[in-house]
Length: 165
Image (cartoon, rainbow, N blue to C red; front, side, top):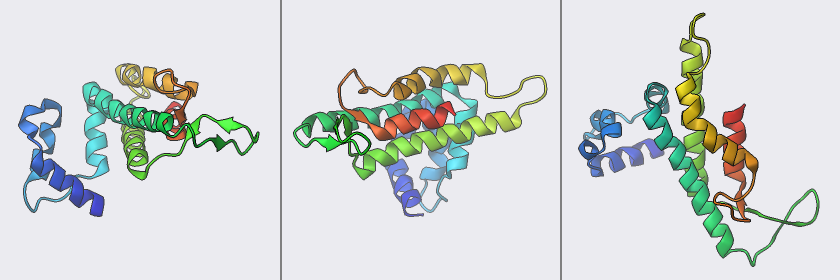
């Protein structure tokens, strides 16, 4: 509810006409308009591979920020609970975690929409959609830093595992 209101205000401030992939959000930017639901956004992403790549990029950029912040906090060593050894994982600010979760939830729901709408002739998720996601999913599951760094973001790793499953 509160996030929907904030998202609506952000939509009102952004020039959606200059962003072709987001013009479908214009009705939600009007004053007093109902908030856009996750299922509306996921339905649009399920039909548009370019928009899916943008949603992937939102998650990846959240992970990049997390990784950069980890480098800044490298003096604060986190201990791995299983091994009692220093871990490369970094704690994530709530806003970064929300970006990564948003990306995962939209993409997961988009895959569900595609697989639910499939027929006997064309089962499952479209190949072009999988191609849009696969490089990022593999990168996230690999577990290293986002751009080859030693610090990594547990949420990003979880993002990859959710989408891989």
